[in-house]
Length: 459
Ligand code: SF4
View: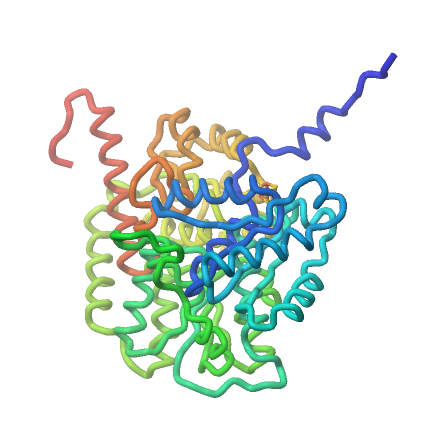
């Protein structure tokens, strides 16, 4: 007779997550590898991981997304995945002729402790003419997609930029590490740098590779991305600007370039809303010695005018904001400046910095306002029901919550897989704030119209 397995219910529940407010770590790394020219991502692990990530990316970007897999089976899980990795690399090189292969490890490869670094040393010894290979460790059980994204950026810089004892040849470009933003944001950032006449090395740059034009014939690797040669030049840039609020500084690529090559690093939050964007433009003004170009100053002026025109519709409303911690901080800053209270700021990440950052950008929240980390959508719903918000801002994953609470959802970030145009949502700068603001006000107006017994036509 077998003894029934008895699990303490509370500890089981605490260790599980229900409808997670985060995605798997190699997914973030795949974003980055897709933003390097001629690169192919290769997941070291089981086939299903690559399928899951491809599904997420394709449903958001509506683009073909090839992600190779070393395709573990039972034997690789027991004896290690060296042969699979070698075969996978050779297949990818033969079929895609890539300029870079970006390897991210999955949970299984990390759990069995596969020594990918030594596998790659052996591979380079046997195939010295193979293209560069970058490897990042991305176990999903100890991070989120955002960790995978930043790990991959740092890994690319660490493994492709010159070693510490080899100084980079100085040049005038500025490195920009924008974080996990949309292709539309990347295009806009490039436009801003061009208008400042400031040469730019943007890493990653998936503005074309994940939001491209129509093809008359299939491309195995889409055009676009940061050239590998530019990554090696980052060590000689005059400065680095990196957008993040909650990462541990020593773990960032900007800090690595500063410590290893004395490239000065400016760190600031995602430039969402006027205040955060002003801080970004101030750095650009100081680096170039030029004032903000007139078209951008005019966009700022129009944005303030729009704030004045529509503040009566937003003032005092309460919003739930969730998603990547850096995005939540940027959105909370934007909401605070347009008169909306970010009553609940939530992320699936565990950063320990979110509450402090939210307090800095939105200091005037009521006592009942909450900042919560490491939560899933069940936790978010519990808090939201108590706080009675008027609207929700975040990715499509919040749709079920918005439907239950019968309040509008403004879709931002990733993934947006129940609307078209996720790749073209602009969040950053004065132009992004304008689009967010108009969309936000219009969501509120539509809700008012729906609920009105008479159906107002002038609002
Ligand atoms: S097993 Fe790990 S790496 Fe693979 S899809 Fe699941 S969370 Fe992601």
